[in-house]
Image 1 (tube, rainbow, N blue to C red):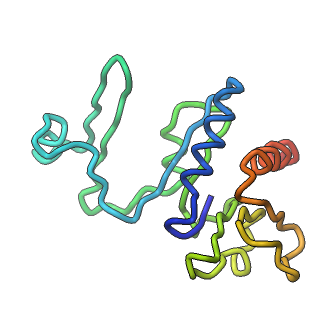
Image 2: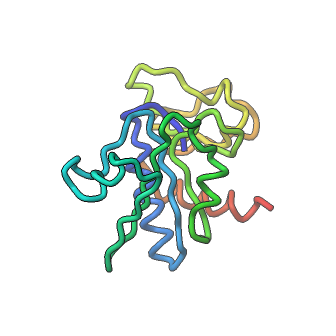
Image 3: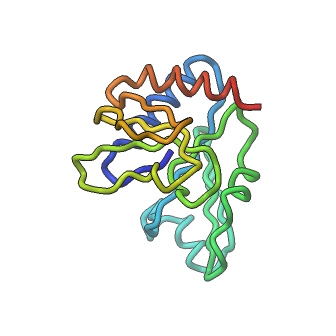
Length: 164
């Protein structure tokens, strides 16, 4: 899923994950951020251990497990490397990674004043928007109503069923 900040990507993704998980599917999500992400306050033990030089710190509890890896100047791992580190799931959904050559759903709100991505990205297979379908839409791109998330979920189901 791609789109500009504020377009509603996370809101739509949250809906899709909740609906798919409610159907008993195990869903993984990878969310890319261009920003330095603070996952715990600097005074907490796991942050102190990372700052001391640990390459990775696993924080484990009876409720969740988090692994924080410090890149320390190394290249950011590829999307494929991130996917490989995840536990098996029925589906892994990705938010971000505009540059990756993977099938994408664009979330588009023209009111943000940002250009649409689909005209220049052949990997965008669908657009969920609060705007009407444009007259000149590239063949093969599905236009969805962002205000009808159930229709987006139905499209996703059909798309995944048709994908080998």
